[in-house]
Length: 597
Image (cartoon, rainbow, N blue to C red; front, side, top):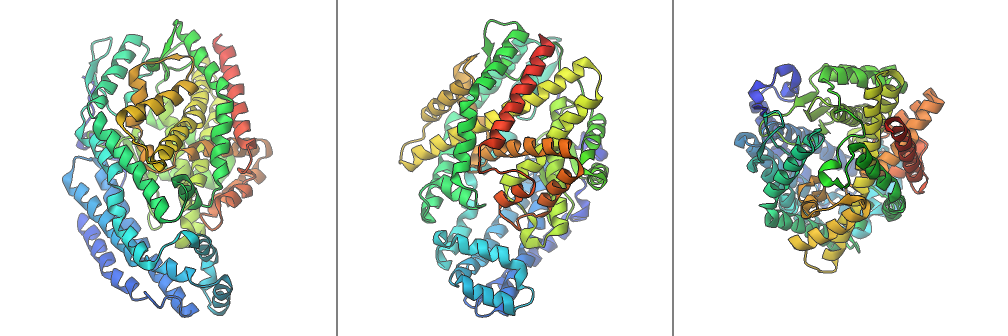
């Protein structure tokens, strides 16, 4: 039987090394208590933080010191909990860290309302008179910018206190689908039994035997449908929380509130989703090509993940994947390439799936740690791309942290997804340039077009759904299981018109964790659009374009996202990058079609 191993069965070289964060859980406990004790220091500035430049600087530095230490406390607890979501000890640690984060946010909540009571002129004079305060100039500008949407210190403190409660819906979804639910075990055509999980579901839908794929698909969704009412409630409450928080902050819509945070124009959302919808015929041609390659009368939803090639996806063992990724990023310079290589060899990555492990993949870590990457590597081409993707995030974090003070070391998701997808594009170029095996090349091209399908188109589809359900909630409509099915099914049919549908796929919304992040998914589509433009420029222009791109990564959040991407040579206020990405998809699809036909 092919079963998912327990964590203890995974060899240590394939686990991340959290000992460099805290050598023991006791050290974490001491750090937790240290942060807890420093909250009083932060609260002492309340009511007087802006009386002069020196006091404001001291308050900001105290806030940064507390939050900096807290971020490491929270990251360690989360990573330990993600190793095995069944482990109650680490789940409790993560819960305590979330509560402490809420307390810290509450303790500092007075600061921005006090800053917003000052004029820009008064702030400028304080900066001029106080050495060190100039470091916070962009931060202060950003605080003043959102003054119309910031409430009183008392209300801000209350909202911070409620932060832990507001995030409950997403936490319930995560624990239900990763820890509590057990998906069926199904039998492969050769008689081997395999357990379906959140992590391997889409990989199993790439298996060559169509009947097996149908069994996996139907078994998974039938099990998920057993908790349909629960997942409908969690998502409806998450959407409602977005709406109510936006209203509290005097925004007309939850989308406006979400996008105003990083200062991204709302028109960018409409441009990317609208441009993709206007070009949905390219996705339709992709689906029709799959139907022809599979030689079926109708393409079904359990066929959608199948590669456009006449053989199964090639195995790519982890060591082979790391070698390809290291070589692929060489156009970004020797320093970048060597950082990637060192990270792979230095305990950054938790590689393989184990029982109870958080599904999916992410890049984490903090200002005071090296990056960490969680994966559920399945020895296939897709996961090699996921590795390149997460290393893009990790190197972005490392470069930003080295270049920027703590206040600017983080970066918006809008920019973050560019860094990950530039690596994906460079990996594609590298593989097509160096791999001679025709079958492997077909799968690389397939992977490239699948990235467009799953990132540019699928995430735009998700964004359309997210907008629709938020607008229903904003109009005080009811978000019931049937309503979710209706809205999602209509959009799914628009995007996947050539596919024969069934009731299961109307419920795909139940398995998407990013719907709990509040207008998050559109940034995958904008990120891919910008990344394709940047990667093409790097390949065509060489070192100068790579330098511009790395300079953009080093900016962290010291500038607004549109300015950062302009540094890398991309204007995301226009449809041009999205149209360029659609063209790249169309070109790659035509090349792949010629190969397989």
